Amino acid sequence: MKRTHTCDDLRIEDNSSKVSLIGWAQRIRDHGGKKFIDLRDRSGITQIVFDPDETKKFTDVETFRREFLIQINGIVRPRPDGTINKKHNTGEIEVLVKDFELINKCEVLPFDLDKEDLDVNEDLRLEYRYLDLRRKEMQTSFIRRHKFLKVLRNYFDDLDFIDVETPFLTKSTPEGARDMLVPSRKHEGSFYALPQSPQLFKQLLMVAGFEKYYQIIKCFRDEDSRKDRQLEFTQLDLEMSFIDFEDFRKIMEKSLIEAMKVYDLKVSNEDFSILSYSEAIERFGSDKPDMRIKDFELKNISDIAKSCGFSVFSGVVKNGGLVKGLKVKNGQDLLPRKKIDKLISFCQDNGAKGMAWMKVTGKDEIESSIAKFFSKEELIKINQKLEGEKGDLLFFIADSKNVTNDVLDALRRKLAEDLNLIDKSKNVFTWICDFPLFQYNLDEKRIDAEHSPFTMPNKEAEEFINKNIKTKKDIEIYKDELLKLKGDCYDLVMNGIEICSGALRIYKPELQQKIFEILNLSEEVIERQFGWFIKAYKYGAPYHRGLAFGIDRIIMLLENKSSIREVMAFPKNKVGYCPLTHSPSIVDEVQLKELHIKVDLKKDKK
Image (cartoon, rainbow, N blue to C red):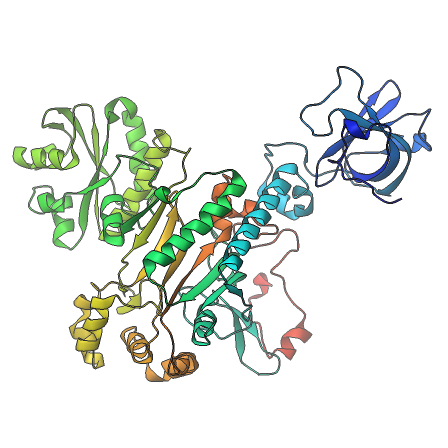
């Protein structure tokens, strides 16, 4: 038998046609001695009817169960009056089966594939992922993902970008996360690394004069899994020569505007805004602010707190920390004491030592267990800073700059979710620009790259480095000034989640060498890890910029899922294990010997 139609093709106009279908038995019903089956393939559902007077081998149908794979030959006919199913495109017809072939049986299902809201342990779903992926919800999601990527490919193809594949087996270089290493059989004791991104190769393509490059590629990072992170992930990676940020930004925005039409979303350039890194941190405590949350901003009261009598606040400021507050309008009606206590615990779970709070009981009137430690004038200033009114609650975190901002960002998001302050009808995009070029690594007492070691300093930062950094001693002398420098880099945030990151790349060999030295890389390390790369810049390298879109994260947001595992075909679970293939797994000793590897594990770990 040859399939003539899919299970979504047939209409009332096909009445009396002879057809052949193949599909899985989604539902089986017995009415008056006849068997009715909803036959499903990827396209949809057609109702088929087995009649003992019309169907050959009818008795075999008695053994059929859900998800049996069946091929049938039959005649299209209208459904009887009152039985039309408007939920399906094929709902006006059914197929009377003349003969059939059972292609494959199906064992008892581990969970119900017909449920839209599937409440099943995730590991069980991942163990039987091939069944999970049969569900209409999952297949629809992956079809939309395919179409989304197709639009992006066509968009960049039309702009003369060239799709170029870059190596998976490459050199280990520091890019912010642990590399996934692959041992070499022929080069004893040496390892390839799977790419965290195609960063250096795409920059070399710019040196090679390709001018416009893109690639949809798998990348690998040995990091702990989160809801928006996997060990392997997909990104749309691209690079362009000879373009400034404004023109580059417009091209990137247009790509998303076009691709989101797949989801029937009307996005325009007005939905994209720009914030500096410093403004985002100051107002929202995060470089990934959710801009759907309105009128819910953080206020810095460190200037007031530094001389107050509350030692928790004043001590933090004296030690270089930060005191910031957040106002909840009408919070006294919305948040009873029990909920406030839970919020205090929430802040502690996110790294804070505690959370202070105050009630606004009238014009410049404050009630709080800590109010006695402040002068009347200080309380008035705090309330004015937070623009408090009668009935409002004021929450405060005092800690190091990072902890204060991180905790208040988490608190802001939680309160907005709990109090329905997020406009989820919108998709809001925010470019975060002017990141610091460097950050200070307290654990290792050295300067690190904030974005990446290949980010071009802005004009003022480049001039400062060229003028003042001549020797290693200068790096220590000008440490504070270096930490204030900005890079020409940017992230794009969608609904509070980073969906892409990029920068103008360093394209001058002398400057790249100097940046490596500021990052405390020795001459030997620079030459061993990056000598080949810096050498390429000595052959007329153009200025170029690029970014990478996190495809899994974008699709997760568009599909309204809480985890990227929902939009990846075969993901690992939350601890990086695959219940389907049982990987990672132990390999044979012979393989290890060929790779010159000895595994040293305790017996209870084997």
